Image (cartoon, rainbow, N blue to C red; front, side, top):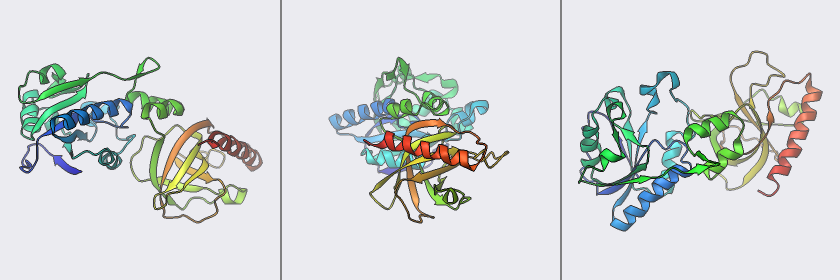
Length: 313
């Protein structure tokens, strides 16, 4: 996949580009709704003999447009999104720098400079896609151009609610992990590296891998989860139980959230290893215990529950 970064003002037009069909959107999470848009584009591209392209943005538009609600954490950070798009067989990924200058562009300028000049012959987007200054451009204005075709993809719902990144973030914050995974069509995942922790787990019979996320992920709510973990240089998947939180039994004022995974039947040192944690089931909220005995008893119950939940995985 060829990655093309576009900064305003455009001074790096890619003369070697071939005509393409482009799916446009931010696509954080690449959930099933996003997949519908991209798969629609792929079908059109294959039917018309066009290259398959995705046009996305970095950073999230809210950083410029909505400072009080800006998103600086992601379900699928950019590097992960690019890996996933490459795996879907995308030929071109246009990454538009979403700056104040870009946000102020008139809709027609965006169409002429970013779509037509980059040889986009088919545009595919969600039904509610908007673009240009004040969001004045939309699917209907795109349809007024003869230079390319425009296809709008209807919303996808689950439980009578639209599948959206906003809903996914809310579900993660409210421990509705099963709903998150259903909307994604896969387990939520976080990539990171195993780092040195407080090493308290090994002293109470539950050694853990302390996973430091490699990117600015929007993490699940504090609590205990049934997870699997993959060492990125191996094929085998290991089952485990994970605590996300601030370890209130040992710390009164800790604010930094840690990810600690206890793997079943695993006895290796994996410091420095790049890993992926897959989140399958929520077990309970994080809580403060009166002492180590109460904590270890609960961890034992958590482990039993995780073993049960992951049994048929």
